[in-house]
Image 1 (cartoon, rainbow, N blue to C red):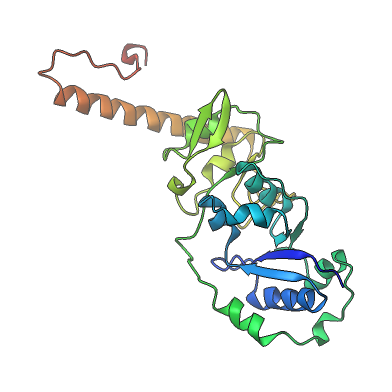
Image 2 (image 1 turned 120 degrees about the vertical axis):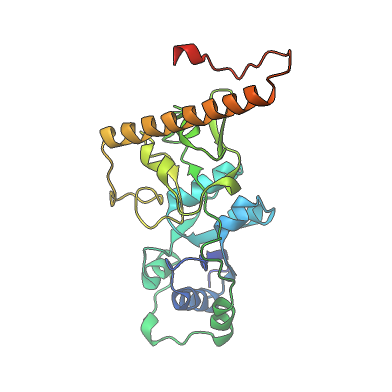
Length: 251
């Protein structure tokens, strides 16, 4: 009997992992002496910087791609050493990694576990969608910071950081598409490598990436010009000079 502490993320707000599969895996792991906890959404706990994540990092984590989960843990200055992929692997293959051999199709599922999984909250469309950075790839070029219109990123001491994940526009992975080192991960995205996977299910040429980046910079510049015009109009009677850090004559 294993007697390991294990956390399974059901990703209940998306359809990446079938609830039946989660219950099936939890049943077998628990039957073999493991302490199993099922959570609705690890992404949500990470986004809220819940203190629960510190304890989860100490367990074996069964969730999605290892690179995605590790990047989430790193964002909270945590280290997770045991990560398993339920999103892409079959139950029998995961059980093998825990040294459990079972003809899974013939095994009954614990009804209480299945009931608990089926009643996990669904927040589809409003769930925790945000980027994390793979610091083993990130070169701190700052393109994501320049590109994002919602203040998700900041640059501190020449290091790019995700500072306001809650500001991210739901289901928009555009910043990941222009990242030259594929360092930006959206765990809830459906295709690799943006979701942290290793396969190239989506490929963007350097020309496409640069074009998108330049168009976004042009849009931001227009926004700044509009703000400048509004402020100038509102302060037309003021004797205080207006300085937005823009040299409009050079543009």
